[in-house]
Length: 136
Image 1: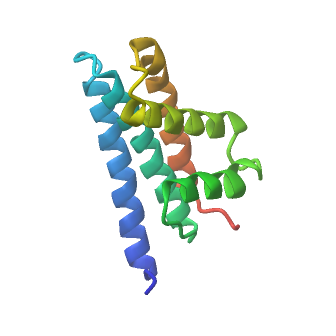
Image 2: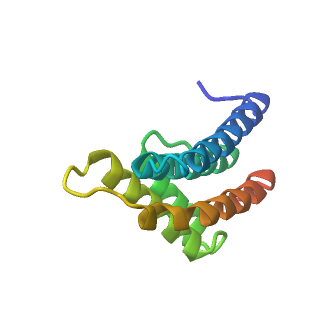
């Protein structure tokens, strides 16, 4: 069962608002120095934004890897999105995996704080695309 256009728009907006809230959670953890939490929240902020973009363009995915692959294939490789944004998204995914699952490496301030502003810009760029769905 697919979404009708109204339902799709509601879900896209919900996902994008979730991206913004999640970015704020990342920022809120800087003072607490919860580097793994910040990496997790930065990745998920970008993930929710990209998920909104895919949904706005009627691209269905079910996994994180699916989101990464479709974002790369439909938006980065076609130059709709700058390759640097694609690299940032992949970097955030990698850091999230390290912070969440790697027991032999602890993330540091240097690993994550420099990614807060680029992630914020990433979300702004994705929002522009969400507001003008591509003809894919």
